[in-house]
Amino acid sequence: MSVNVSFSWGNLPANYCFSTLEAYKNDIFNLLTGNIGGNFNGVIISTTTPAVGDRDKLWVKIDSTGRPLGNFIYLGSWIWPHPTPASGGERRMYAGTNDAAGLWAYDGGDGTDPAGATPTTGSMWAVDHDFDFAIPMGPGTNPLTYDGGAATVLAEGGVAGATLGAEKGLIDKTELPPIQLGILNTGGASGYLQSVHSTGTPAATGEGLGESGVVTQNTALTDFLNNPQGGGTSVAQKHHSNLPPVRGIWFIKRSARMYYVGA
Image (tube, rainbow, N blue to C red):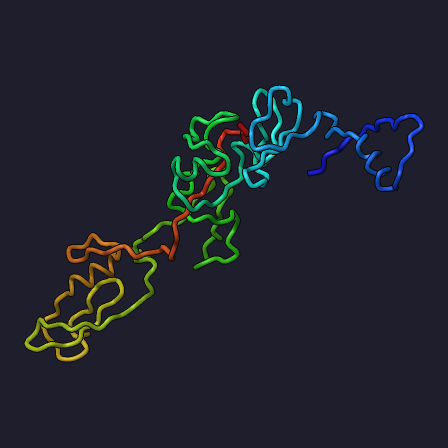
């Protein structure tokens, strides 16, 4: 960030005479003063809060080793605006704890609940629970289509965003390809192979692949082929997983707090 500095020159004494060029340079600079931006009457660099008489100055707060911690101006208290707008649309990922010892004290927060944040108090960041148990994806239209259907669209939904997908799912029988299975029928005097179609209907007597005998229906297989999602008398179909390997991490958003506080 650039800052304008307004300089003022002092006057050298009458009949001034310098002894060396170095002394001349020092005499000139000792008479030079400047104000930052024309709004501050100097700069205070200190670890402690400036005195009441220095509230018209810019305070550069440092730690005990001299490292800068931040710049502050006095407007009722020593404050400086957070660079990310309060309650804005920016999101970050945060690996830590969602409490006073973690997120609530992160990035200048004072360790208190972000739900009660004011412009100068409370947590700077809060967990965005719209992302709980969700994987982020950019809104848009899938360039691929499947089985002659329309392209999948993930719409932009404002702050919350749109959602798609599920952790687990069941196979629908419309998703099964046409199949014909051979099963071992043990209903006759000796076993034989019987043809069963993908509709779940057993082949008629005489279509068995092997020794003829009494045709009996394989109930479990028929139930599955008729209804892969379950509901038959012999099938309790389980959900299959759609979830890839993931790692949990907080998605956070800015609270209503607007300012860092120096003291």
